[in-house]
Image (cartoon, rainbow, N blue to C red):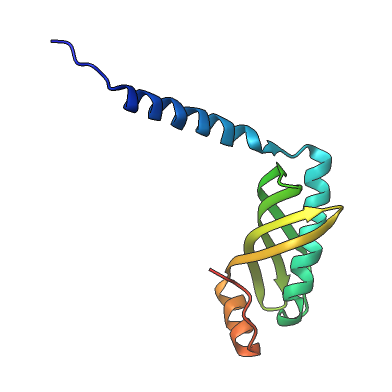
Length: 128
């Protein structure tokens, strides 16, 4: 027994595969210099946004989960950590950087202590 595949399904499969290949090629990974610049820009923007809610902010760290070149800039998913006098605070999100500055910053999740501090201050930080 031989089964035949309709031309419609074959064309749809080829189009789907080519779209997937195109989508993966649309963005390229950042190089080391771009990652460094993106990390510094996001850390500064995130710090400016949340530092007023953290008691005595101290050491900070940023982790870039992704960093891609495309869409007229550099895009990154990140997690920003800062130590306050009463513990670790963190925020994660997505940012777009162009010309060394953050042009878009979307915070998607917060540590529970930062969520409580922002609620107490009446400031909505995360937009999930």
